[in-house]
Image (tube, rainbow, N blue to C red; front, side):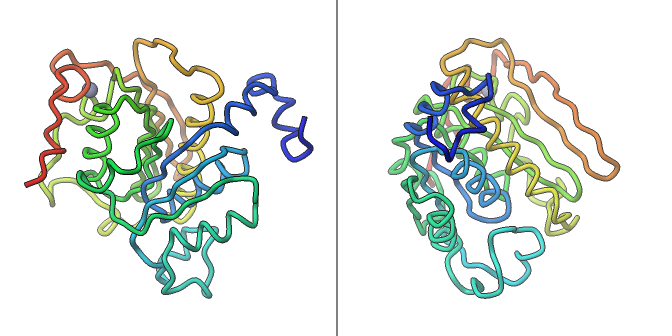
Amino acid sequence: MSFRYAKQEKLEKIGLSGQKALGAARILIIGGGALGSAAADALVRAGVGHITIMDPDTVEIDNLHRTALFDERDIGHHKAEVLREKLSAVNNDIEIKSVLQRADASSMGAFLDVDMVVDGTDNLESRFIMNDMCIKHGIPWIYAGVLATGGNVMLVRPEGPCLRCLISDLPKPGTYPVCEETGVYGIIPQVIGRLAASEAIRYLVGSKGAKTSGSNLILLETWPPSMEAVSVPKKDDCPACSLHRFDFLEVP
Ligand SMILES: [Zn+2]
C-alpha cells in the first residue's frame, strides 16, 4: 500500500486492485479550462497514471472566477502547459502531457491511444465530434457540460447509449442557450469537472467491460441545489452507437 493513496485504497470500492488499475490508466482530457482543469486535478490526485491535456488556448483574466488552478501569474500562458506544470508538482508520479492543439475531427485521432476520454470543452460541436470519434475507436468517454448554475455528466460506453441518443443532432447556433449568454456560476464547473473525474474513476476501477442496458445521466443544479440521475435509453436508429455512421468526422 502506498502512503499517498492510503485513504483511497482503504475504500472498499477502490482497494489495492482499483488503485493499480488507476495507475495503469491513460486518459485524454479535451479542454483545459474550468471543467477540464477540475477533472485533471481530481484525476492526478487520485493517481491516474497517464494524463494528456489538449487545449490550444491561453489563460485570460475572466477564467479566474471559475478555475481553481489558475492565478494571475498564469495569464497569457497556455492552459495545458500551466496545468502540466502545476499538476506535476501535485503528483510527480503521474505522466502528464500537454498538447497545444484544438481537438477536432482531424487532430484528435493522433491522441486516442487511451482508456478513456474526458470532456472539458465548452461547446456541443466538439462533443459531437468526441462522441463519434470515441465510439468509432471503441473508447468510453465522459460527457460533461455546464450552463449557468447547473450541469450534466454522462458516462458514454462505445456500445451506447451515447450523446446522440440524448441529443439527436447538433442544434443550429443561436437555438440553444450557451454560457456566453447565460453566464456561468464559478462553483459549477468545479463540481461538474470533479463529478466527471469520479465517473471516469468509477469506470476504470469498477465496471470495465461491464454490460449495462442504460447510462446514467447525472443532472446537477446548485441554485437551488438538486441532483438526480436519469436513465438515457439507447436508440435503435442512433446514427453513432447503433448505425456506426459518424457524421461529425466528415471533415469538409
Ligand atoms: Zn447513440
